[in-house]
Image (cartoon, rainbow, N blue to C red; front, top):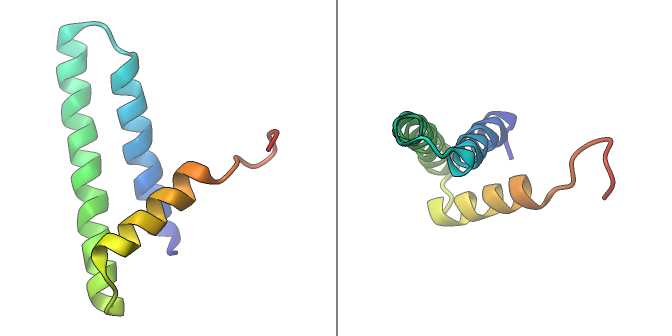
Length: 78
């Protein structure tokens, strides 16, 4: 999986996590926009990659999310 896709998915996931932690309505609205932009960016990159490699976009997205969300962080407990 390309590093670019991993980085973009990590950014989208981080933006979503930050959104979930906010209580202030205005801050949530701003963060929701940031999360949506990050999600749109990763989706576009996944689509481009899948087209270029002639792969199923949904399968690429699923593999990417599993890789990012289920890989233990470096240096921490597994």
